Length: 246
Image (cartoon, rainbow, N blue to C red):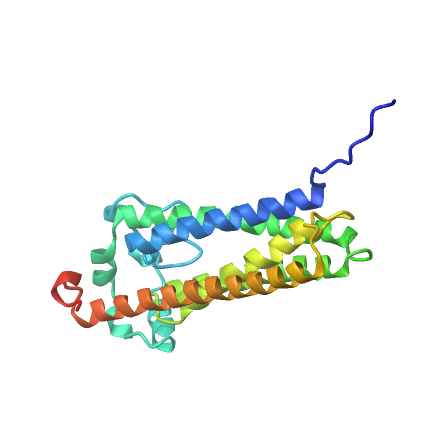
């Protein structure tokens, strides 16, 4: 008997692009978590440059403070509810930390593949828009979320890590995972499926929706709790946490 031809289960080019975008978002979220844990979120006080440079300095003596838009920092800080008087050349000089600078800079570099692959996925989705219009719109939504989150990243910097802005930044990143995952799964004529009878399938869907809601809620609440501890630390003049936490 002639050998049976097995159906290829590999991904097509569009799925590979969407998967690359998805993986790059996961990597960025991991690096962002490192930035948050190390307290390097304000390592670069400006955006998209870092301390007025494309490649950030390694020591404070290399910083040309005349290139930094101090007035712009103060005006935006005032709109975001931060005391503008707290932003001066002297305070910026004191806040310079080379480890934080380069940790934040690496975080920004990690965001570049996200933009590139999301744009490539959207362009490739034009060939999907007739057969699979929802895939096209999910790819469009992914690119829109990337652009909005890039703008949100600037607000995070200029707000001085204001409460609420960081949570929105994280929530957008988590929504991006969903849209890109859908593109990677559905961008083919034969998407991978689990064959189940109607009863177990309905139960599985409900369980997945509940689990997804729990994960999203936990992520957002975790971000808000972290914001609250940062505000408490500022209220206690940045004293060690062991001296004021209950």
